[in-house]
Length: 130
Image (cartoon, rainbow, N blue to C red; front, side, top):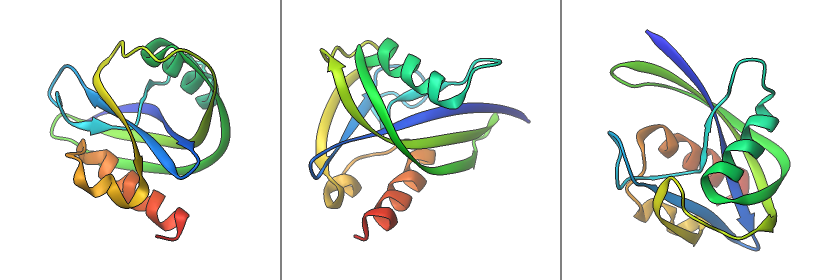
């Protein structure tokens, strides 16, 4: 089975988390943490900064590593490295998503998440002690 390695940003501000809704593909209209594929020879942190710039036109600070999630979809294996981040510049523009929301951690379960991201939500709740 093909493995795809991606990075995801858990962008925090005060007590809220930034979430995005996919605008295309198999998981269209499902919620996820923004990010994307790591290119050959690219460090995970570099990939995350690049992907957030491409998808959201935002600059971020990567504050700390949260978790790596492995998830088997029907056609590929996903390895997703997740980092806690903050925004340090730019103006939000949704280039790969059709919606975005700031939500408190206790509200995250209300969203229809892409399957692998459900595991990230659980890790995030543990991290925040909720």
